[in-house]
Image 1 (cartoon, one colour):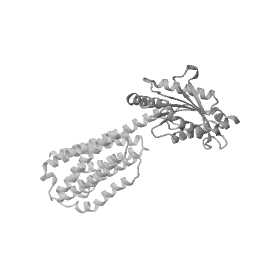
Image 2 (cartoon, rainbow, N blue to C red):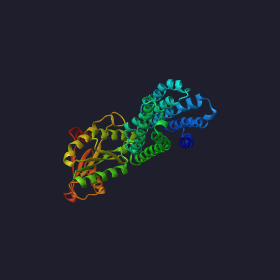
Image 3 (cartoon, rainbow, N blue to C red):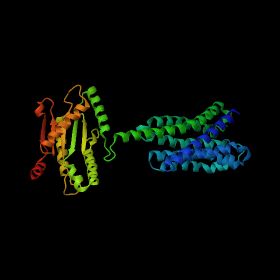
Image 4 (cartoon, rainbow, N blue to C red):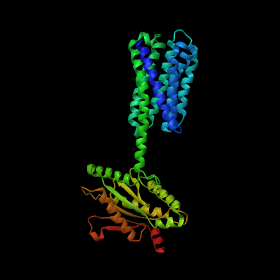
Length: 407
């Protein structure tokens, strides 16, 4: 009687969640994750209705279709996870293959008066399909959803163990798990009820964590160039300075401004100008290390953050980038138009403390000197110099120099 009451609670839970996720799916029907999540609960709900009506239904419905709905619903849940993680559909097909492999035996045993083999087969199929679920949860390295994945996977591992132990008792010991092992029967019943409640709540947590991460990314990433925006740059600079204060590692800040960019917009249009900005962002990213940071500060200005690097170390690389940019024929709006940039560079110079705003202002001052000195060059800020001569400029290469003279 208690087991029947627990099953009744489980069935009512399934019906309630089916309604909730059905409404959610109908509101955003274009989202495959929400659709397949609803399909999973819909399959379980069909089983719940058949279970509640089992006294008035033939065996092939009350036991046959009802039994297959449980592992089938987990297989559908795996499809929802596949869509959520945007991965190959093979894991979803593997789940279906597991269910279909056990279907002939299940149909063979469903009319048996002794339902122990058919019920145990459901347990084994549940366990095998949920092993795929655990793999899907733990194999995707998504920092934004790490917590809900870990909790969901931990419970699913416990659920798999319970289901496979039930199968072992039935097929190896030839006993009824619900009769011969009362403790296992109680643990199973409680696990089922918790599972019905925990899985949908965890999936909601997964989707909410992903949404929060995407919103956070949108707030710090420039939508055009897909590098950090000004807010993201300021946050990154604060992190690097915190690391500098703790470990003493140098940080170099570079302000990059495209030369005569307004002429590109005026002559070729703003769409062409946007393309140039995108290509410049891609070029700068490709020239730097993975630990370096590229961001769009505003308009045609970019900022580079070079951690663990002082000006002496950064100088040859930055001058090489400045020269390579001017020589790159694929960045400009046409093959005969070259895009050049002026750069202003500063570093922490061992100062303690130093504020992010101070470094950006120094890099901007060096950038202004580069512009005033003829553009298409790199200028370096030296805080120990006199106020009137704190920015030292270096021309990039002979080819760039020749281009400047030709102008």
